[in-house]
Amino acid sequence: MTKSGTYQAAFPRKNTCDSAVVLHLKVLASDTVRVEKTVCKGSTGIDTMVLKKSNGCDSVIILTVKSAKDPNITITEQNKLLMINLPLSSVIYQWFLDEKAILGATNSSFTAISDGVYYLEITDLNACEFKSNS
Image (cartoon, rainbow, N blue to C red):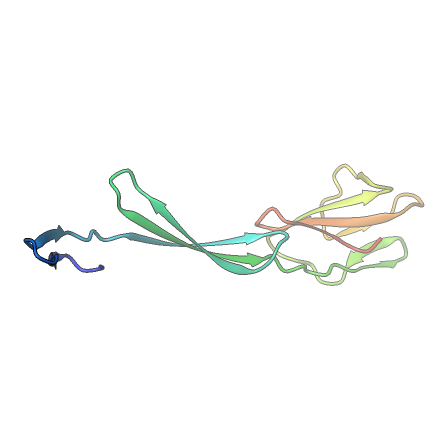
């Protein structure tokens, strides 16, 4: 039953008295909360959870999960200047040389200081990390 009200039911028996039940039902409003969360890895989908409160009321939480979009960072090199294909806003840049972070190298471009394998790692507003080509 989903509506407040008084409900009655009769339970007849053969050759005996009938039984009757009266139910006074009060349906309390449930809380519905919509939450959207971006995840770094994983699938996109919707998950519904029902939480029981201490007073017996239910809360329904509908969680929509979106996977963060990979910005597909590509590095190009011109006279030792390393650049990405499209500078991004609201991200943190960190350049690496031979798998080690280069201190202070936190811009969208970097001038190579020695031979080695360079790549760029960006961290977006959701704390998701993406790496460029080497």
